[in-house]
Image (cartoon, rainbow, N blue to C red):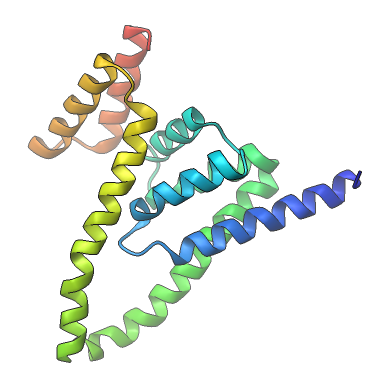
Length: 181
């Protein structure tokens, strides 16, 4: 059996590699990678349970910043503070660097017909990726009529009214507590 420090380093390396390649898949935003993220962290590596994943994703919606802050939660659950730091850096550093690099050049390139066609082709792909992410989260968080009703009310509140997402998350938490979910 490997010493604890060696196991920790091997675990952090696995964590870093997992989130590095997931960050490259974040085409269309973080929600697009949720199905694969859930498969990796829940099913393959068992760093969190399906319930913890949905709870962590929901709680990450209370914080300012990217929607994928759930990876910091997963890293923390797996390997404590070092895991949270490694997961956050592995997930956000590559995509931030790539975005900064491409954004500077894209304004010049987007006048070309091929670039406009690429943009128009990527929009529906991004929507499909986001729909897959919503479906993945719904499978883990909606399991009966009460949770389906909460999901429907939250959707209506966010689309029909100008209710800030953190207020909807907090109200859902209180409703869940009152309903004993």
